[in-house]
Image (tube, rainbow, N blue to C red; front, side, top):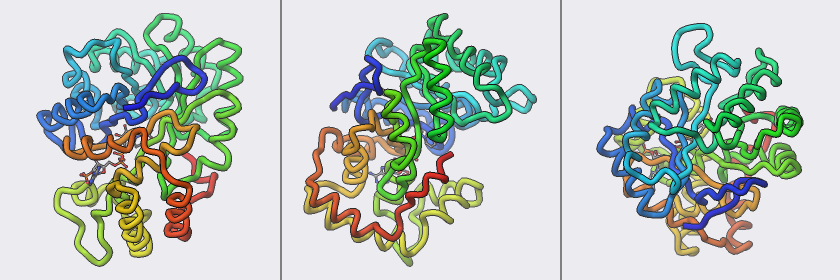
Length: 329
Ligand code: NDP
């Protein structure tokens, strides 16, 4: 494993991080979750990503249990606040009340005294940014949170947040957007804005939720047990299906296979390695339903792709890549 600084901060994070959205507390049983966490630790992954809202709060509890007994100083535990965690009108968003309550609940579920990186999971246009950042600042001063991040904020929102963070002396050092060979909407605006502020990217869905593993084949049924099969019927599936499970995307992904092979990589490894070629990416968060996936994907850490390989990837995917910065968030 290799480690990178998180933006301008002194915090080192593993190039590959493990996330537990959809998996822990939902798609996979707790034994498999534990096996995935063990595989990550064995491979040198130290950065773990979750959120209070994942699997209706169960994901944090499963992660907390799975990491029990691990020396706290040897890992970076990251979680998020914003999405609903209950049905009450204050059980969501970025108000001071919800941030404080959500943070305390996350600390309990994760069985820890502090969170390394605490993210605003989305921008909350109904609450003043000052209220949100003052609450974050108080959590930092109390030692309950070490660093602040945001997820899927636009460049403009990040600039506003960074100005307040400077004023309040809050270490706002991470942005968590979606980024993959297929989804590059952060390149035009979010990455340059963050670079100016010393904010690193910790990116999600490097395999476009499994599409870039190559297992979804054009004109073939969706594989049994895959994410697309287990989430069928949900709003999430509608988005996945509409966005990625199209013939032209799957055909383009098929054409990546030989490029990966010639580079001595599997397709999932090529996808993760591609993301890591961007020097503004501090860490790439992978998801896994099986420990074997962790073992395979983590081998992308430290891989340096030849510029010719990057050119070939761009030429194969050209028509199916999303670049539009207005799709952030
Ligand atoms: P990926 O794009 O890495 O997709 C992971 C899924 O792809 C796995 O669960 C598995 O699904 C499949 N897969 C992984 N490796 C392989 C392999 N080698 N061969 C075949 N299939 C494979 O990431 P996620 O979409 O899971 O996102 C990663 C993390 O990012 C999340 O856990 C979360 O922590 C974070 N995230 C943050 C968001 C935010 O708003 N901030 C939003 C979404 C995610 P299966 O086997 O079931 O098909």
